Length: 67
Figure 1: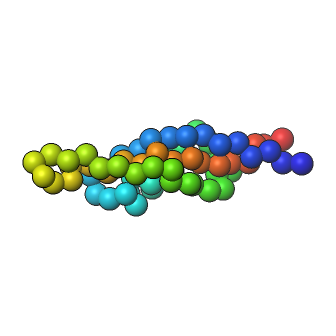
Figure 2: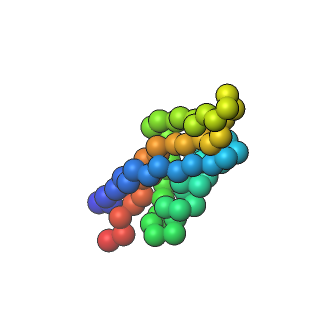
């Protein structure tokens, strides 16, 4: 039987929500192995002078626990 664990991370980007999601995965993969999926739970953008300054995602990352 395998066990799947889930961690929640927040990541940002000045480019896009897609890039913020990639950043979340890249950071998580530095310390987590066997990542299987990324679920974007929330998205938001920070606005400065009526323009989007940064994009952020709150993501759940699932991975199999090694036996």
